[in-house]
Length: 315
Ligand SMILES: Cc1cc2nc3c(=O)[nH]c(=O)nc-3n(C[C@H](O)[C@H](O)[C@H](O)COP(=O)(O)OP(=O)(O)OC[C@H]3O[C@@H](n4cnc5c(N)ncnc54)[C@H](O)[C@@H]3O)c2cc1C
Image 1 (tube, helix red, strand yellow):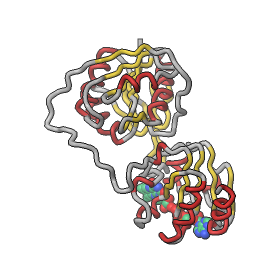
Image 2 (cartoon, rainbow, N blue to C red):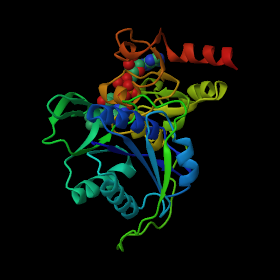
Image 3 (cartoon, helix red, strand yellow):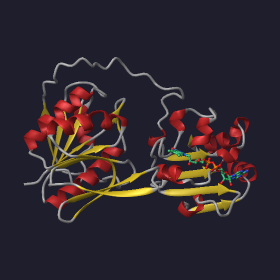
Image 4 (spheres, rainbow, N blue to C red):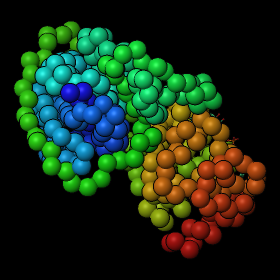
């Protein structure tokens, strides 16, 4: 049988959205191979996580109780143990900071070709993985030699698995190897513990805001609709909002229910981070701004007129 091993992701005691996308991607690969989908959840509150992760399409959940989050030794060792035990053909991991910390080392140990930042996988004679390069300007397809391979998937590219499944949950103990590296602790970057990737509603502000003092206009809207504030890169580069608020290729991939892009042109590197949002609203003075190509609702107008009016209606 050609089974697939997928890896869930959690941080600070919460499962991350990509965990459910990894299930969808893993199931897709397992269906192509005619095998089962095994899901690994490693370190932390794994029993609770395992129950939450029981979604349709998952056959077995392996809850690895050892270690702490971010400890790549534990991840590597757990994955190697599970890979050998399940005799999996393919491994699907998130293309996150954590995933990229352990995926290359695991792939090396397991002697698997690794394709990172995948946005699609297809099967013809063998697996073909699609990834984007040069700021999403170029799409490349990678033909994997043989059936065995590992990928890290980009967040927001596969839909999240929904519903309640009937997976077997197995608790696994491993012996992490001795290592010179140890997790010392967790320190938030400036901007507090806001994770824009977890927000249901995002108000995103771009260079069209003009100057830092004007941010109050969009903050008022975010407050009125209980949204989280995010930004395009120039706003972050100018130091007007912290780095953890940046959406896009070199920022975060977000998939909120509603994304309101204000004074953002819609450059390809920005769109790469928000195109998976359920409903996109764009406010821009330029009717030809590319952001309108991905928007569900567009308002052509000056943000300094439109945003206060919206705020007043929602307040
Ligand atoms: C390798 C690389 C990685 C990158 N990564 C990212 C990334 O992660 N995230 C990201 O965002 N960018 C990223 N960029 C930058 C990206 O190419 C764009 O430069 C950036 O997204 C533009 O930001 P913007 O839309 O806010 O500004 P602009 O492109 O300058 O657009 C401002 C928009 O505001 C509108 N506007 C002006 N005044 C008003 C007004 N009063 N009311 C309403 N609308 C108004 C204008 O019509 C315009 O459309 C990256 C670039 C590179 C090369």
